[in-house]
Length: 110
Length: 116
Picture 1 (cartoon, rainbow over the protein chains, first blue to last red):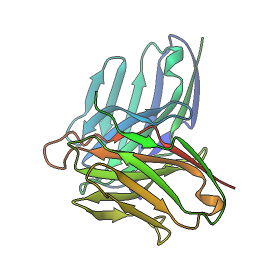
Picture 2: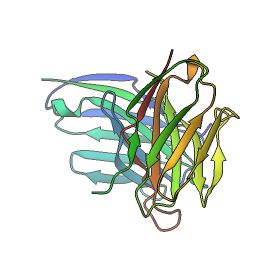
Picture 3: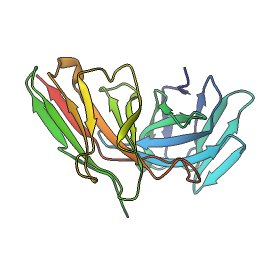
């Protein structure tokens, strides 16, 4: 299956701490994307990293990609209560099919 | 900022009834998608649509489902003879183009379908 699998399934941290979640996948990709979903809401695109990139930053987000290990990580630095959400990695195959993983639920405690 | 809009936000229907979920993708986008998320589970791909035809569909997207772009702006998902297990959040998404774009999908807020 192309789908990414996130780890951990759930994460609880104190405000100000960093949150790291990982995504592993099985087949080749064109790019890998991370999305956020607040409870009961739609998916919001956070960041995209292409298969020939190794690291990307966007504000407090840092994404890495290791295609040799078929894995990616999302780091949220200096977390805030508003970062409480589910985070999904989505792999995009060479023929542009996007598939979501099961997600990591992040709870940031004030 | 352009956005994908979906209606209704929540629909309750009786088992066996037909449901139409509507989406207005971003106006210059060319690829359209429906995804489904059963409560507490992962987001599942249903179907992609390009150039007025289905480009890909998952095994979930059986004869019970159909999609249509009736008027060049709306993109609809029809579910015939709904079943209890069709209860889920249905997300519409659109993407600009395949070549030269970022690959980012823009999602609507979802339509929650409850089948009783």
